[in-house]
Image 1 (cartoon, rainbow, N blue to C red):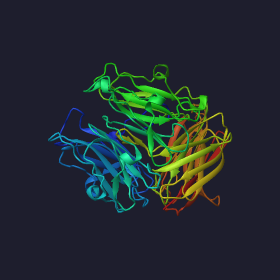
Image 2: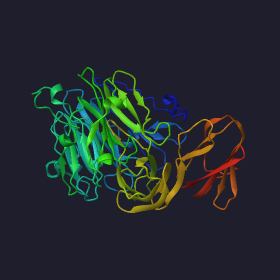
Image 3: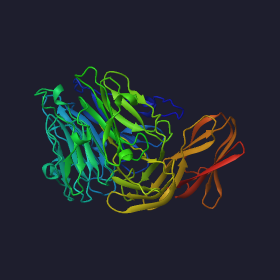
Image 4: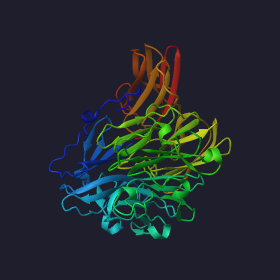
Length: 544
């Protein structure tokens, strides 16, 4: 748990997610692989799916900081007998019915060293899932590490790109009737290397999303070292096909590649690229490529691994970008296989930024599969695809934009999965906003780099909420503090706190009840914090 002061507290045991595996097969890659956050029941609380060698776990968020494993009753354990190595999972809404389905990537079978098959679980909307792997055609039988859901064919339906070790990748096109067809060759997303990780971004900022895959460079693998296996960079042609431009962009080799991610590290508006490296390579440095599109007007990638200070040599596997210190820029966490993780704090992002939290209503609650297009006051339009997928993981995080020198955003267009748009205009930079489907902008919270002396109401999360929301605030100094909740008519319905508090960050919780413990109805409410002669207010949306 992020304490908000640059430190974290291990709450694994108290949260109830200490995973104990019994009679599971152990191979050289370990017993546990992936972790995917999603909200399968659309209650506003992130749930956690853990992939293992053998039975997987679905930890249902109870809304009070604890979780309960419901994988067996939900029907999503996978191979519960301990043979299949379930590598990763991803939440996605393949049928666009408003709830998240679950796709499991299976690397191999630990019993006979043969490949298992991938699994598609359809969310039935009642807390249970149905295995439709075979009838859907998504039961790929290669050695899959990672899978990426996105609309590759441009027909508005989410397809699935499956990244395979020991064999070719596959693009399964969504037919719109619960079945999928292998269209890899037709869309030109063919990669016959030893695929590991995958990332999606708009590297040339043309509005069409490109795909980058990590492989094992041929020099490190069996075969002719003079014929290396390149990491493909598939540039989207905008017509439902792709072209491999990896040599033109200079991102063809990252050693024994694993996790990779596009993100705007320097807030200049274009997306940079990071890829981790490890296994059979001594040393195996991680790679960081800076996108020069903003500087040159044409896309080109510059290797800045050493000067960035993020070229760690430990045998890496996973990575995720996130704003751990809430200062507006994205930091990097690298998961290493035999050593402790690296946490790289971003200290070189001088430009402006915006973070957008999406809340689906007709779409799935986390709004996975959304596309956000933003136009700055200077006329620059930027594009982001929100899927949350990382190597062996999936995250629920705000959509992040670097804005360069722009102080304002003229227009934001959110394209929700399944259709429909939300349009927001005239937004200031350097803040975190929440956009809800059908309701528009519901919160806007400046989130500058926190200092112990600031007095700020930082955020309320989740927002909207059904049962409970957290109120995060920071005090200038120790003193008397009063925190209250009012309804839309200005009537005070609850006092959350009143008394002396220490300086620093605090989190309090409101359970949606009034002063007498009665459950309040759905609607807009306001939290008001008064301290040191100052007062700040934020809007919250309670949905029963």
